[in-house]
Image 1 (cartoon, one colour):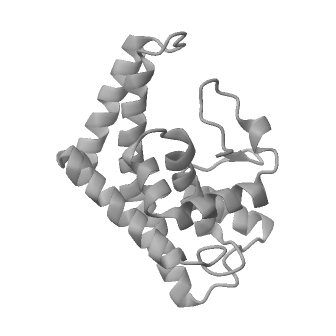
Image 2 (cartoon, one colour):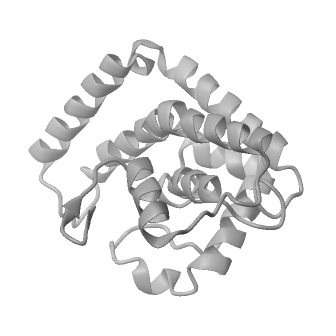
Image 3 (cartoon, helix red, strand yellow):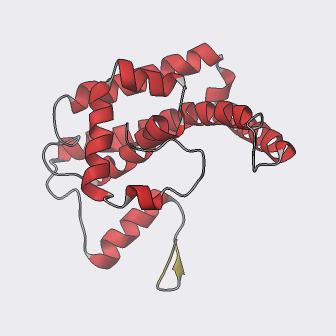
Length: 190
């Protein structure tokens, strides 16, 4: 991100920078314990769920190469998938079998679902930074990984996370459909 001519890298550092620069604190209503839990959930999503979701995305990319009217060069897709799989191995999660990665994803989604329960947001009636981070991951699984095990888990086992995604979309992106510009993506109106 570049803000007032200053480059800031990493999404969390960007959030912290903007909080300081604009005197914003979306976590001000959280207790210290809630902040610790929020941090742990965000890290779980960034360090586990992200890679699991990425695996589902590359499976969809492989499928996309066979779609009529495909705009992507097959060599480019093959190379991107290869790079991503190597990154998964370097991270460590890619050393697991496909089934083990799905098991990790299910455990992460279960934890999020149990903690969310029937709350409006993860820490009550008011959103915090972690809601933005978790929505970012969950929305990818829900809307951008059609037919994946992640989407199936959300729709069949962890429906409160689906309701959460729909609630976040309605609350913060009333122009969602206008923002969706990629042909062939599943629309966010289930």
